[in-house]
Image (cartoon, rainbow, N blue to C red; front, side, top):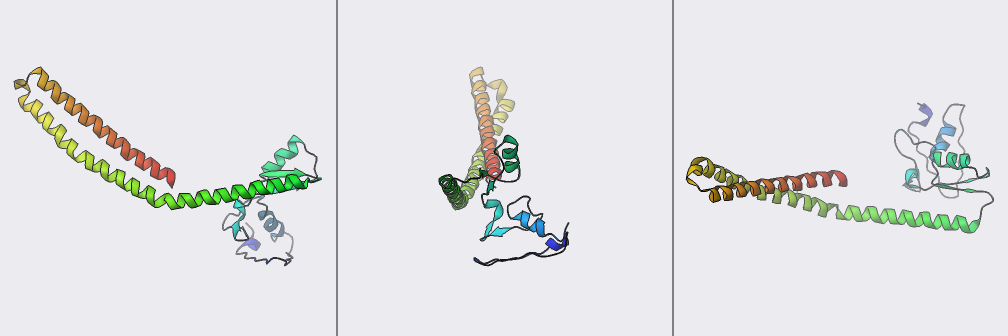
Length: 193
């Protein structure tokens, strides 16, 4: 833990330059390594242009030779892509365009998810209410069938006992379906959060 990195609030306006000075071990290099996300802060966030750096795609440019080891090292250090020098400007523009489109799509998707959250909550509430409303008549239906079989079973013919057994089985199946709807609602609610 570096005390030099506590409560750092640094705003650099476009066109401004900042020099980070301090003794060895004060956190200068650690602070700079947060920008390209060589590691994440243990608390707080690093913003560039009001955007969390975790949401900023990083393309490393390197003069190292393109080898499998260097490629793996680049991805291991947090890059989503990297280019080797000399840079082909058309390739760089293409990559930037793709990353901007992906970021815009991600923002749009998050906005759509947020817009649909109230509807999802209403549907969850509705399914919960309907499930409980459907369960209410099943209990007496099953209970009355059980009473008929128990109290009048000897007086009933086989066909009547079969009908009552079928009604009870259907009520139990309906109860299981209602339980499944409630469980789906709980699972769906957990997945949305």
